[in-house]
Image 1: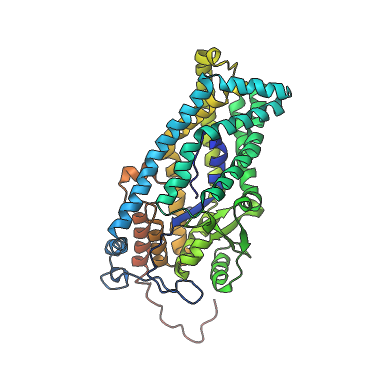
Image 2 (image 1 turned 30 degrees about the vertical axis):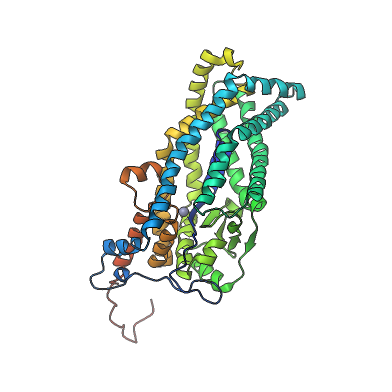
Length: 460
Ligand SMILES: [Zn+2]
């Protein structure tokens, strides 16, 4: 899952996109691979530490420690710093976004943008769309310093970004246009509902938001992803055949595997399941193809197939629906109280007035900030399920451990339990390696082979 800088107004759109892509992701640093590279550039083997090799005294704990010991102290300090910095960014993003929203309200800019949009047109839906465009441009400009720090400078400082400033800025511009168009459709629909159903809008609004989420998920792989990256069918049978074979074995009707040139923006390794219904597909990124051993790729694909077979996209939509209904109900309550108190001062005339949007954005981002441990635990639980499914499907625990090590290049491997509960949207690297080594331990002593059946026994 790619992290993007969140500004409050794009929370809805981004949340939607984030849910549409359940993925495993990691970063690549410049460190050489332990496995020797084959002539094709595919690292040929996953090297297994001595303590993780099959032996009578195999211990999942010792094997886990042996894998973790592969990360040297400097690399560990670096990824811990990057990841822990991310905790603070959640807070700074929220505070900065909140300050922008309060500014728009208190200085009367939101009311001003509404009046300006009113000069363009009095036709309500278009008026709302025009206001939304002003609002999004204003918040994007005001948030720009933080966006540059978080999305560009900091990523480069940790060796995670590959783009120069120009192409990065172009991508930001594209994202803004998409947010104006797609977010605009949602906002126009929501205000239409609020104006007609002032008391029950939060139920119908939640339903429309969920439908919108599904629409976004449906079109994302076909129309949204190609705006930023080139997606191609993988043709090398040495890569596709083991993956498609595993897909068939798991009842997945896939004929193709896709690859994306993620190295255009990032050094992170990733793969994902995206789309909905007929557009659902599994995509590997080129960093994974370049750096992952066949075992590692297979284990990551097993994880992604777990998301698919366990219907995580649909379950995610269901959970999202419940969260949105709750959040909108709380929003309804809080909006009325705030407007009763400050509405006149801000020249915001009610919840159907487009100028209310910064207040709504502020309240929604507060609600989702408080819900961070909840949303993280929901995704982390599904990720854990996909991990276990992937171990069974791919039968490549060492490949999976290797993938977790790659992930550890930008994720703290060994958090405390509360830290993991609050901040982790995937299981920790230590937990993932331990799950793999536990699986391995339990598969070292297979059930004793049955005695050979007599030749004359009837077929079963
Ligand atoms: Zn996943």
